[in-house]
Amino acid sequence: MLVTLLVLGLLVADLRFNALRHTRSALEVIAAPVYWVTDIPSRLSDWNDEHLVSRDELLGRNGRLRRENLVLRGRSQQMASLQAENVRLRALLNSSALLRDDVLVAELIGVSPDPVRHQLVLNKGQRDGVFVGQALIDADGLLGQIVQVSQVNSRALLITDATHSIPVQVNRNGVRAIAEGTGSLTLLEIHHVSATTDIREGDLLVTSGLGGRFPVGYPVGVVSEIERDPGEAFARITARPSAALERSRHVLLVFTSKPAGES
Amino acid sequence: MVDQGPFAYWVILASFFLALVLALLPLPEWLAWGRPEWVALVLVYWVIALPQRVGIFTALLLGVMLDVAEGAVLGQNAFALVALALLALLLYQRLRVFSLWQQSAVVFVLIAINQMICQWVQNLEGAGSQTLFFLLPAVSSALLWPFVLQSMRSLRRYYRVS
Image (tube, rainbow over all chains, first blue to last red; front, side, top):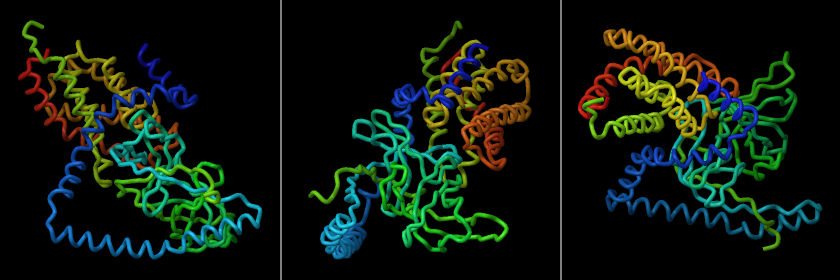
């Protein structure tokens, strides 16, 4: 009986008052060895990838990376001048300077075992400067945000979790909306967009930065389907997340820092 | 109590640790729904085998560990496992004389209750599942019960845990 009361007390304290944040991050340290063990298979396959490759394969990979690097460097040549121009134009418009983002590479060491809960466990924690609310990206787009930090690990909530919403805008014309997770890894829903809004299939949704939680301009998803029912006030819009939510092993934690104009 | 093996406590601890690892091991998406509730299975086994040693308090500690490891609301699995241990404590004398498949049926019901409590708490949080798939672990756990029972029993006899 006493134990039942204790458990119910725990539930209420965590759900209603969020009072157990510190206890939880302390307990997370005990859970770390469990994650270390569950991570062994993927570390083995990593080791396998690194040490047991044929020379041909290495040469091929090297060549591919070199070509990719060339293309990327070619594309970024104009970046510096474009950035400077952007800063000048923003100054002309009296709007604030763009922020520059630094990133920290983190590795995935666990995923939530519960299929309705889209969470990742990362191998970077408070020690490395990770903080709650930090944005998480991969090579293709936004993954989610950090919801809990312990000394050595942190836990991130994906944008597709059913409890997650994110302010976005259409990259083409700046229409603002809110994308909500559905609990499916390949689906976002955009609610409360009126039926006459200019939004089309294939539009890229990027973070709008409203709400102050996510940095501006990271791709979130691509609009995949729009259903405009004349009988309803809002269009039914779904989008496909840009980031490889179920595949990324290495992810980037974004640190939004000083304005780029000064440097 | 007389012929207690030297590793008795460690065997119980190690089995729970192994269950936690199995509960957290990443699975492909199509398998994730049917993941057996390893921790609950091992807990039920120990409660039936050693009700004087493993009981509600163990369930509470284990549940909190599982909550932290899963990132669930603190108390979700604790509540479910405490309820499970309570029911198993009420039933253990009958369960011991059941045949394997009868035991499996009871385990199915126990794990289903466990899952429903978890689902209920998740709904409070707004993250519940829309379908009845959350009951799949009860099926897979019941099917695995005979194997869990046999291997745990031989483990217990080998290390003379009592």
